[in-house]
Length: 117
Length: 238
Image (cartoon, rainbow over all chains, first blue to last red):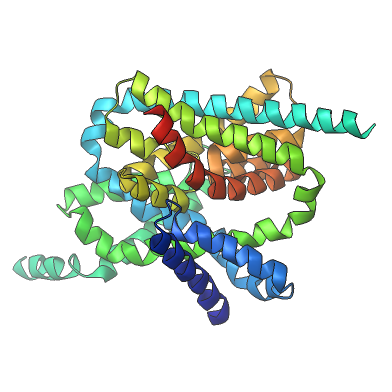
């Protein structure tokens, strides 16, 4: 467990270091994700060593959103004045995104199928 | 009475109280959601926020004091984002099999998710701070918070938007896809993963295992892409 935690934090630290150092707009942890992916490709046995701890972390991912979510008490002014607009924007944007994704996915799948024939 | 007041003022200022309260609220609401059969609207994150916020307001605790305790949980979002590499790695065979549809749908869906939020926020005359906080709403919370911070949004507002987006996506996806009579589980799962991250993915797993796996792939890939796309879209569209 400690090894996995150390590796996860290490990847994040390197990611943070590179992102800040080069002034990239990518969050450090995302770069850390890419670094860990590269490490997994280079050292295959790493995956099974990481699995037990990462599964526990990812199973409780929801809990980690709570502290940020409670930040709503600091934004009550925005939410109370704009809640209806926000709800419309979020709903429309989510529906649009799902429609475009599903249409692109199916169209490309059909195209690939036809090209193979 | 005086003793209680001084005890309270001691406890409410230590990290212990609010750390315990956060975990306690989550355990209660997760249990409640499970008992209700995990419907998409009974989201443990949303319910925990609804449970904790009035307590803070009622006890006159400001967010800074609360966060001193809750930060220990908040901190784990970073390593948890890094940990998303493992499910991505585990699914590499599936990704390879349909790499073209996956990449095209990812780029299209991710661009529309962030772009439409930016355009719609301007159309509805929302403030710049709100717009910047809305842009990364479709990506998983730890990444969205990082993006929001990087582009100058309000991370706590982004957190609320991300959670609401997940719940909206999870509620809408099944009726929407059924109305359009889309029966391709890969496509359905991938769509909800791109638009509604982890909450959408959890929903997809409950509906169909293939949809769940594709939603998980979409969520992890979108975490990588959104952080690249949002700064570019913000420059173009606003």
